[in-house]
Amino acid sequence: QEQLVESGGGVVQPGRSLRLSCAASGFTFSSDAMHWVRQAPGKGLEWVAVIGYDGNNKHYADSVKGRFTVSRDNSKKKLFLQMNSLRGEDTAVYYCTREQWPEGFDVWGLGTMVTVSS
Amino acid sequence: QSVLTQPPSVSAAPGQKVTISCSGGSSNIGNNYVSWYQHLPGTAPKLLIYEDDKRPSGIPDRFSGSKSGTSATLDITGLQTGDEADYYCGTWDSSLGAGVFGGGTKLTVL
Image (tube, rainbow over all chains, first blue to last red; front, side, top):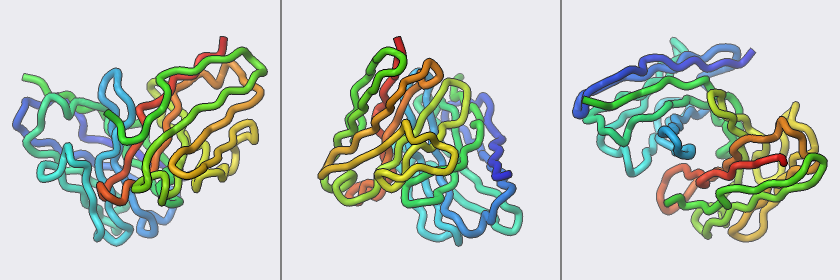
């Protein structure tokens, strides 16, 4: 069964850092591009970042560019999101998701909550 | 302000049909595939439609997608109370070099 499980969320002060992880199982992780998508409280889905199947070809939303870094370890079947200089507007549930078809995200985790507050 | 524009809400009675629109531009919908997602609070989003009009296995044919120019549409027929959820369109924006979602449409089954 294809599954993604996010972890690493929590409460953090503005300006601090947090690293999210996403563990994959049940599919060939190294074959697929992976994305991070977030949802702030009361808001819609917001795309955050993508990383190619081999760790190359990374892209970021303007709102996180220069502060967030996406990476992956295919040997461990894990996806990461390093979040630096966190702001209140980064408060959200963060989902990792697999891109099975062009912009078609077919497997999603349940998300991990990040709260940026002093 | 989302790059893709969706109506904030739609509603219809059980058994009826509803249409959700998603409007964009040439850098996104006009030249890239569109996907549609169903999202219930506290759960993972579910892929309903990919590559404009294809359904993943397990998605009933009550859900259908189409695209024309820079707009896309999700149709849901035979509405059920269990269809009440938020629906999002998504695609890639070649000018931004980023993924984009619509603002979401809340479906109410009256």
